[in-house]
Image (tube, rainbow, N blue to C red):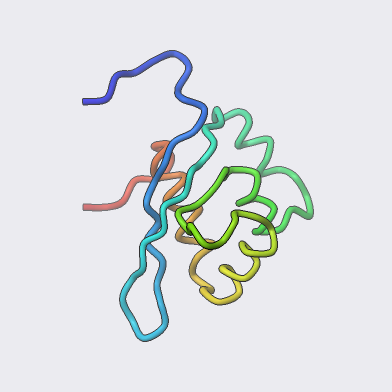
Length: 103
């Protein structure tokens, strides 16, 4: 069982399952930034923020060793895997306990 602290670690890693062409899922590990609910609510109210900008604001890195985590490479991922944005965001919010998958 994980230990609860008043101030959680500033970053954490989660595996994101992304649908790949031809069926099935690929896995990509992301390093996410922990934000309190008040900060996430504030971020969600920003007008004009793109999917890419939101992911860049909540993530520090990913598991691709051959591709740096940057805006250009994230654009490529989101363009090539249309479901990736939803998968990344859902995994992030699930890990914070904000969304819960049904049994």
